[in-house]
Length: 315
Image (cartoon, rainbow, N blue to C red; front, side):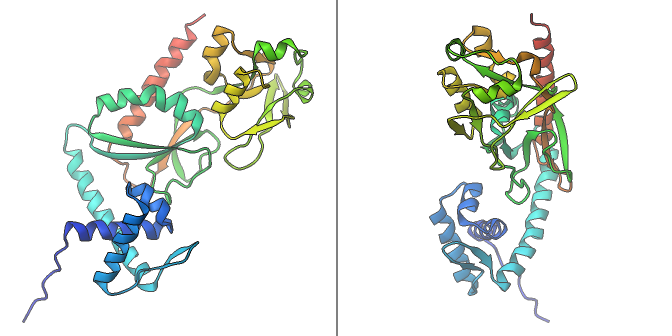
């Protein structure tokens, strides 16, 4: 009885199969190229080569959409299971090592990128030199599973309930700030409603809506639809405009603490500054936690906790 030999797969075959799998999952050559770290043209060439070798079309492409053929959908399903097994096997090997190794892909909102990643990631990279970290800064609420991220960082209360969320640090204080130059020419607001007579730097959120500034004093809560000549989609620009005397900005106090201390910005309505949920790191619980993520979580919690204790001791 003859036995059919198992086809031998080259490194190129495996790379092309994985490339097709990512394109099929994301339904986009552009997004898949970003995830894989290659150019869109190289990715398209790899998929075409795979289709040529297999003698069957795997993807239907138009100028706007990418969708699998029947053969492509069937292959992708089998590949997902196969590559998952490969990943699990590599994870088991890596766990036998003394130190984690691999690549982490994180999706982080801009406040988290500045307040957490920029401050604390260098220590993690120094302690774990064999872990590579890719960070996508995005204020949109991204589906980290379908987009191929290992974890994300968002404000508490915005994390999907079906994901594991880990609190990073204490609750966060939000403030309205303006430069002394701006306030010199205008009456200082006494209540949040007074902001309607001011020039405010509006903020469009990742969900596409213009954010209503929230204030609280005791049991009194107010959400103000502030007026303004300019609307921005990132906090960093709002702060820079406030420093330039353009108007009043609304942001996390931690983002402007340095400017407040040196006097280039002043808190407007300090008695009304609300405290909101802390940032959380979150990841899919149904997957095996990737190499390095547990170590990153532990280090971030430790560093942020130490930073909070240090800030509490300052005058």
